[in-house]
Length: 179
Image (cartoon, rainbow, N blue to C red; front, side, top):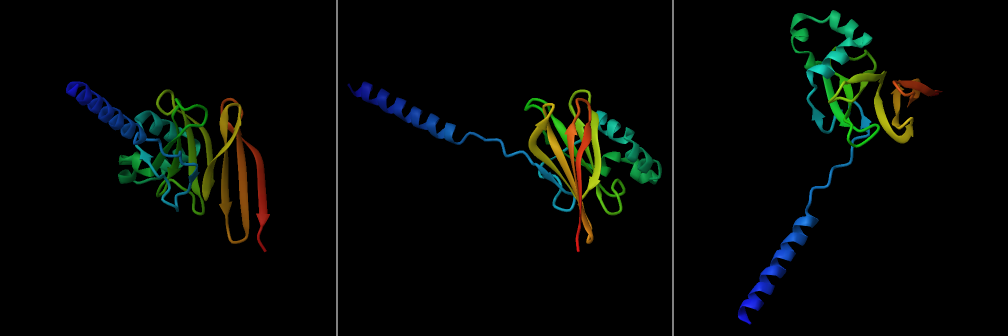
């Protein structure tokens, strides 16, 4: 009888440990949806692979900017960007929101690139400038819609992009004058 009581105690203790461990399982943090270079840009930055860096530098704006950089800036082009992972179409496809840093941004706006399939055949599918980029919950052609906003003391411009099957296209642009 004593061994049966000991066995039941051990089983109950084991079950308690399992229940506590299950309750403490790591739950993934909510994916970042709003990106802005002025607000700690990327909450969980990721390193850029050589393939992603190559497609970024091949984009027209980055190519033109890179051409006028000094040798020390060109020596480490990864320092010109900060990236965060997002999932625009499915949880198993890693996409990136990339923000230009230092000389890789505009005089009055940050530059944003969306890179799809970052781990396999990366492609720039959106480039835009503004104060912030937001990944929306709505989708077009199975990709989340994107909104980029820019403001000055005189106006606010908001552009919403929808995926057309290969790249993002402007769907709606609003410009509000501030009095």
